[in-house]
Length: 69
Image (cartoon, rainbow, N blue to C red; front, side, top):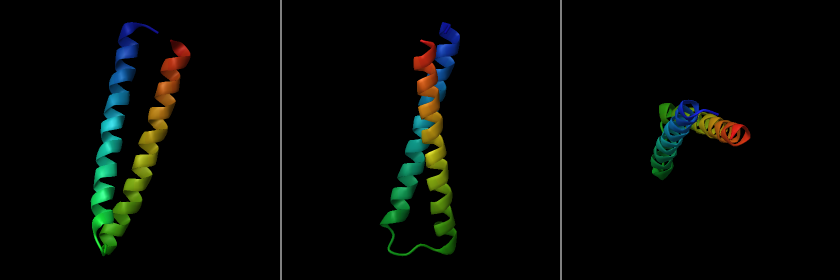
């Protein structure tokens, strides 16, 4: 893998880690509440899906980097 492609993948992985962290933080905020509104319940479900998707993408990109390196 050339340096440019490796740098791009590394940047994308870093971005996904930050995104995953933001989702986790917001989920933690929601879980601290004793009661969630209907909108917050929907947000919780959406955030869990987004967090899992980000984790799957991170996993795939990290393995791609290792396979090509």
